[in-house]
Length: 89
Image (cartoon, rainbow, N blue to C red):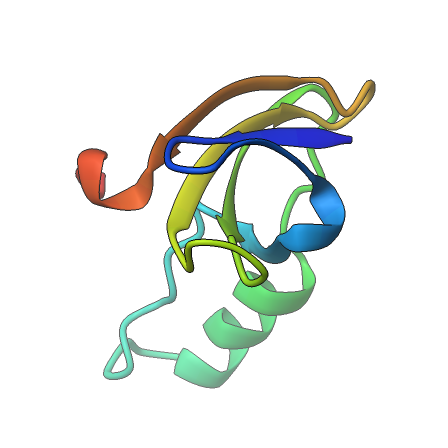
């Protein structure tokens, strides 16, 4: 798999570190039933098949944080942008 870094160009995935689901939101620390909600958020999340937004870190390159949309069935990279260019939803 290859990822197109906005600064370094196309690079092998071995230069990057996968950091998880970019749409994941932690439950508030003061939420009622917080232990159960935290357990559900960490262990009972969906595992989507198809396009998925992910955090990737260019650890062996320019040290940029990227948001990558990757098809989890085919590993095709559909879009890449710097994390700073995308507002958090």
